[in-house]
Length: 293
Ligand code: GDP
Ligand code: K
Ligand code: MG
Image (cartoon, rainbow, N blue to C red; front, top):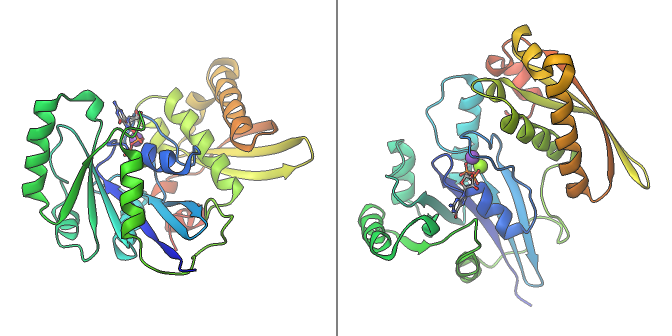
């Protein structure tokens, strides 16, 4: 029996719905989603297996101009997603313009692999506006097939899926056929906690935070987790903890609920806050947190 497999890489501006789409394909909440830019920091593989195919989706950080080392690493993840793609999914949302980064945009218009331009959030548009958008994008990215979708409402996601299946090259699988992702459990613990921090704190705080799960102990009926929330400065530590520890407690409760859903098991979680001065610009720390190869 012939087998198809390949890398399908999702690329686009921040907040257009890349992570929402990847989760829709996988049917799991692998990638965290918030309305804030830079929610996704890593390149995350989500794998869909069929009897005779394997699709390796990769979600990437939104394209930005790096202002510090962490963001440079984030953009390196995006670069690597261009390099190994068998199919590129370039996602835009109704009403937005092309990527601000010209070099990245050129990689899309000059791609040697098939490009599907996914015009997302069409639930926010009307027919007339949509037609206008489709012709605008046809002109800008002539090498792409345009598919209007709503990742959030699962509209046309199956159309994209079927088209990917047609375009997928003949190949043996790249990962074991029961794999769902390339990332270990601790990675998802870190991400789920970071999502709750993105949702609970304002301004610069979520961007100064990194999570490190120091303990992940799975027993029959319960998982014990110890995780450290790393911040850059003492003042941020106080904000994370909050008055009488209330803010941190809320993050802990929300994280636990989400982790229990994710692992489908009871979870016990302890959170600690530590200051790790200027980690976002420290090569050694970035490597330790998995931002650099
Ligand atoms: P990313 O930064 O590109 O990964 O975008 P996310 O997947 O994190 O989504 C950013 C925001 O857009 C979230 O609030 C999503 O709920 C929202 N969103 C994603 N897809 C759609 C859609 O089809 N329609 C609408 N209205 N909102 C969407
Ligand atoms: K986002
Ligand atoms: Mg994302």
